[in-house]
Length: 456
Image 1: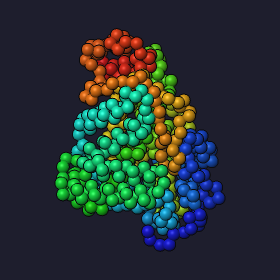
Image 2 (image 1 turned 45 degrees about the vertical axis):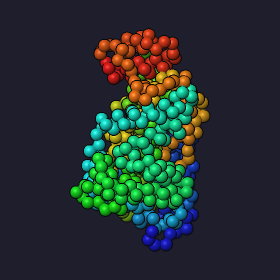
Image 3 (image 1 turned 90 degrees about the vertical axis):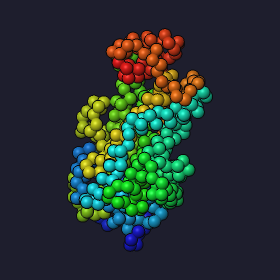
Image 4 (image 1 turned 135 degrees about the vertical axis):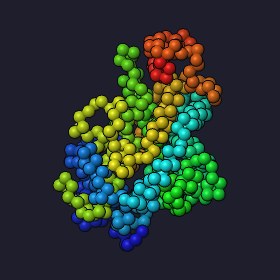
């Protein structure tokens, strides 16, 4: 860092958050109610990201769009802010400047983002989905015979790591260290040590792929015409890792929680069943895996909706609060992709297509393999991990009749079980009942719906 850091408890001069800041770092189970109370105070409210680290939180949808679409006024470079916080600030590793596309503006951003998008575009989506399904089968097979499991520890925490390792040509030992570091940063626990673990692991991966290139994203970044340095490569990968492990884990888990707890997804045939893609749309609207993120730093003091936003001090977008802003006045979220969970403007997430594919395949696979799965505790008793940025469950315990899963055909639908194409959902349900014998009504509906969507 440059300059002398101010004491952790001293807000910058003129900071509107002084004396009236909500402790965002304590946010956990009560998050939806907190956003409602914060919105009542206005579309921009003062918060603390960690004790004594102030920021302005944007809770209004239209205001969030204005910030995200104005990179001239609201820059992504945090180096001015870094001079005001101590080196042991818990949120510094996640917010500190890195030479990546997330923290760049203008031509520098365009150059780095081009390397990222070009490399991601080379990923074969059909092969990616196949790898997700194969990895899911392996993970499901490890706990399916027990009749119980934790869909966080046993499934969603591991699956994004396996997929990331495959996409980036990352050896498992390096991948383990990467996820260990990223989880520590998001939890703001031992964040400085976690940052060092993650940095060392990624640099080792970069050097490996310089020596031994292959058909993977790391190698494609290395050979891109913009000629990234090792340092630049490392930080592009860290950015993609940040989006591709912890938040993706939370998207999968939050989607499964919704599907297992919301009556709309277990309704009868006359009421209809929402698809997994519709469930993901709802989660991205109401419970996004990154609840508060997309930080920007005003280039000068800005008068914004009657609030003074000081130069270089964080303006954080509450994606969760903005998405649920009553001013939007819409209950029709299925197929509606106008939410801000992928951000907006020039810094819109470049990997959202891959992320949706991975989450969708992961959710479909476990529901198909364990169709009679139910939550082991009432949904309101599930505990959320505290933190200013993510929306993450500690665990998602489930029970189900033990299932013998065979790799290669687990969770698949045998051709003999599927009625002719264009058959109605009721016919699919009847065939599934005949083939599988007695089981729960919810399990029948889930299997029938998925077969119908795939084949008819």
